[in-house]
Image (cartoon, rainbow, N blue to C red; front, side):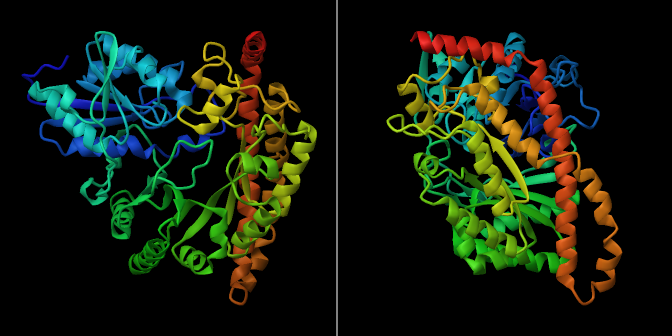
Length: 523
């Protein structure tokens, strides 16, 4: 419990460590999650509160690390005791670690609170029985302020909107909190609150929500936008106070509010010209925005260099199952438009998506791998990410597979495997779970190879010629840089895939999988 007589209090928000090395591990050491920083920034403006964020995936500057991974919370609590600990539940695969941290702090009498995309349905009860005192339902910026004020004043916690907690072994839900619409009222994210982290890529946001209604995604609802001026202000502050040059706009779909997006791009372009600095911005965007040449031109002028696109799959029947209304050949044509505009295209894929059980896919794993490789080459995609479908809590996909009795028990295949690198349900009849796992490694291993180290070296020899002709052929530099950059990334990707494969080979996952499959058959 909180000592109400204290003059100052401390909130510590923890972003739990990934369960093991995976393809996200490298980039996680260069960035941090935006959600914990946003919530921490709100509390930091409250009188009498000190706030810090601990990102267990980015403890690069003197971070108190455990040999087993993650932060040394015994050290943290001894050196800077926290009165409330918030735990970020945005990634399902980190939930076991989240519960481990929660139990540690709860045993020390610290109030624990969590929230994030994992907490739907039965998972709320699970959390409240795993060391969590309170679960925030929905967005946290307004709820955390109301929660802290009520807790410190000794008021009725049941009056705080958007909470779930246990009372007499029953889950109590307080009144629902409506989604935030006035984002200009929320303070700018203060990344100085993230202790021990070395951040190179800064996450920023303007839009929450997504109207696409994809079966596998938890992000739903009508998009809610802050002003373009507010997003520009975030970027300005980070450049001017932290010399930030690399940004990732984390909105699920950049360009949802088309006219305002173009206005933001023009403002960002003008700002860079005024300060004489060139930024490097990455966004997530819909493939069909390639048809909007005015938008693409504005994006390029604003130094948006990389677009992350959810192609999902080049197999038409799987696209239909996902509620995607597009054909593979159209996706190739649209991807090439982004390429022609000079964008670096990062393609995100889901391998082996389950289709309608009444008409299961007949494509073998070998043929699927060939289809993916052919598609990636034709679409001229610069970098790729191929993962397995994940039946995340709260998604229509999970409900469909649960109704069909295909999801492996959490007791057999736990939440820590819900990161897209492991099969978590029985696939379609033409595939086995083992084939799914091996197939994504095959695709990634064919794309990211050791040989690209030599390509990087050979390509450097052409640089003098490019510089010589640069005053006549400006686009020559861009073409040279694109090839050089892709070769470098493909070699770096080889290192990551090799490390991930080594970690997987040391694990006992296939033994667990066999047990899970046997239990499915018994049902």
